[in-house]
Length: 120
Image 1 (cartoon, rainbow, N blue to C red):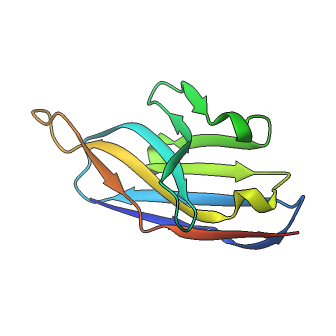
Image 2: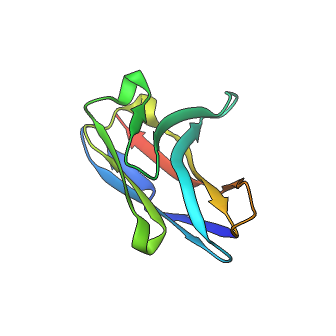
């Protein structure tokens, strides 16, 4: 199973970006999917998660600015980021809990990370 993230870049404060992350490989079902971020010298923090049923959880500081969504048919999770702030500058990582077959309990896989830089 591989997760391929894309969509990062450099944007001015107040701007928007959309991140995408597609899972591929031996996939029977995907349970939770999510986005995390890690700034230099800091721990990796949860940004947003979405369950297979569509329940969503956000980090407080991104509520109202970020929107997570998923396309189950495409095994893809998205993160729409608006009104970006310099404090949002980080490497963003996607993850997914992937069930590989009927007998599997599921394992967590991570994407490679995509850099988001917000200039002031």
